[in-house]
Length: 352
Ligand SMILES: NC(=O)c1ccc[n+]([C@@H]2O[C@H](COP(=O)([O-])OP(=O)(O)OC[C@H]3O[C@@H](n4cnc5c(N)ncnc54)[C@H](O)[C@@H]3O)[C@@H](O)[C@H]2O)c1
Image 1 (spheres, rainbow, N blue to C red):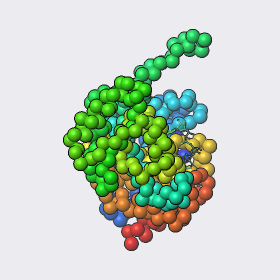
Image 2: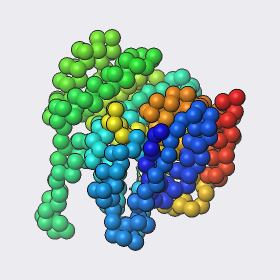
Image 3: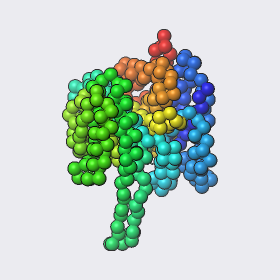
Image 4: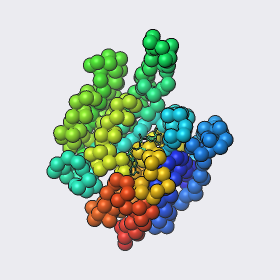
């Protein structure tokens, strides 16, 4: 029996998580995937009511689950980034979820804003380092609000942190039946300490002689992702650059309405989430697209070893999009609950 911590969070989080759990329930009835969920209240409502963001006890409890499903965190009534740092970064850093895995895959040609790109030409993973870089919180403001104000933000990379995420990327390329290529994306020409990434990439790469070592500076990588996305197989990059290029990747695959990620520490409890935020303007309106969160469930099933269940969900999403039963990944084109109905029906149809 798997136990899954569910954190619906804020804004549209609750609605997209609700539909995703319906899909999970349907899959479970077909494949026998056995699970129970425990729902946690953390987010803006809970904070405004109790003053509590994300207690240590919750983090300790999360360690005893097999996976965490997160909706979204963030609410305009609370200072920008406050809850996001406490809860999302709290889980990522607290559980040492060092891989942020982002599939960038096109399921139907009409979803891609680039002319003439076919689904088989857009199918790669970004492996983003998830516990270091610019997001470690080192730095601050001095003489705030004065003409002499100083802002400092340090980026931190350790040999260990860099090595483990790069090794994960090579292993992923080894498992995939694609180009067997890993592209290191950095900015080591302008940020010289990123030379740590360059050397580690080469050294770890020697353990994987069958995998091609490729490299692009982050600015050029953005250009190549648009110009020739078929080139990419597995991309490995730092926390900040990964955060940025995965939104570009999301647009290539159709928008934030489909993009999901796994925050992983292989072999340990890991967290799955849509990459979009809480889209406060759509909260409670039944217009948000639940596909990204359902895709997060697909990644979670795969991680927890239910490959059949994961394939059912992926095929259901692909079919719903190709047939335009879900006509768009943007808000308001189909009600959230109706999109959930479609995905439940598609999962059943896929199972025959
Ligand atoms: N992992 C997270 O929980 C996460 C990620 C990003 C932003 N945030 C937070 O979310 C809040 C809003 O941030 P934002 O506006 O920059 O990003 P957002 O992802 O919430 O919204 C960006 C745009 O995409 C649209 N959108 C997002 N998800 C959608 C969906 N499922 N269906 C249809 N349209 C969708 C929104 O309406 C908006 O136009 C902020 O508090 C931010 O800090 C949280």
